Length: 202
Image 1 (cartoon, rainbow, N blue to C red):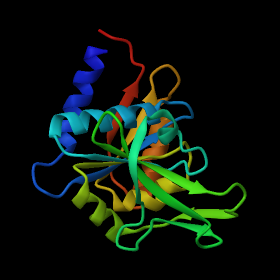
Image 2: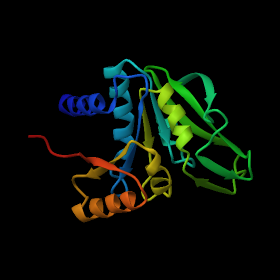
Image 3: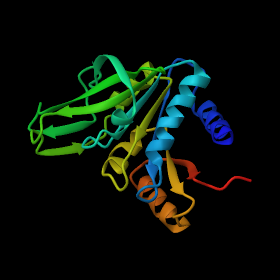
Image 4: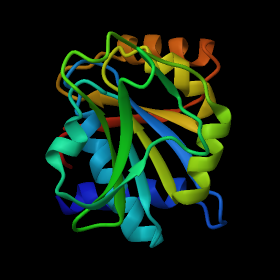
């Protein structure tokens, strides 16, 4: 575990800038179950630890809200809309909202999409460069946790400082990572590299 923390500390230091404006990155799983959500949550913790600034973790699985379900959240819920802007569209309009709440034990804000059961008939993601500009001003590192094969990957990747692929060492093939990288780059995104999860130690 110590070695994994050291690797994530190094990644967090490279991603977290020293000036006032933060960075926004997306974590994208190469295969289903690659562990991108776990890496995203750990990276948020390490980024907050090494930088002393809040990390903002957006869970793009608006149906399951896995990150909010795993974390112990407390305190006031903040609107996920920034200056009236959104990076998603729900139908009918106003049927759901994105809330950001702070972790009880770390300066990390985690998103949760809230709606009444059956209220949202359709949900889509769209580019929102100004939204992510605002998010960078409030968080040292803004992390997007994208579900496997989500439409959010190509919709939001162009607005990010970069995308980090997460591959499962026991299941992923290089060709799958190459295909995903090509898909992201064709959409206008920038792939920063690959984190190999569950890799055996030295």
